[in-house]
Image (cartoon, rainbow, N blue to C red):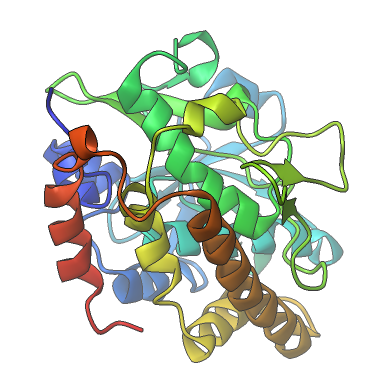
Length: 306
């Protein structure tokens, strides 16, 4: 059975159009430089936008440097910028940790504030897919749990993901909607069950993943390190710079950036330690070769980044 290296995003996306759509042809620093600035978008009211966005008062916008790149944007007041800015931080962290998610930012266009999301074309919601039985879908959601746990992004249901197919018929999951993240709660908001893998939450009616606990059985840390390798290479200065860029419209951005950066680093340490205590370094003998190629890839990508 073919194995998937989800950490090599560009290779996994495969198609040039899809790589460009999800910005995998850019480096993290280049992406931040391009998106965390004013007036990189221009309003285009003639653009056709998805119906769900149109009824919520979104309009179309295009990138000045790349008119092919279409976005939906909605004006917001300055006092409402905090939530969308936190979502932008999560998008950039997703990108840095080799996670596929829809570009989401707060930006200024002609002096007005907007929240903006890149339009993901030819995609459908995860809701109707058999993601518990299709390994490619299930494993992407398993890795995504790492991100959502660290962000305290609760209420992750199938409506919070899209599926795009590439020309190889790979089913690619794209995370969307970061409106429920909590980067400001002190330290670790969600804790792991001490006896068996699972989590305890303050918000008892919400979910971190559409999957059930049993779907995680049989995997090892080599698999989860495809995601942890990126998170463990985060540094405080990098996080502070990212947070200040995304929170630049808020008057207390320096204080907020410090809180978010410290929380992210503490949560990465906690979640990685918890996973390491619950999953073996390597699974049983019959799985020994399963992630060897993946391990070589993410070791090469993240070597000496910490």
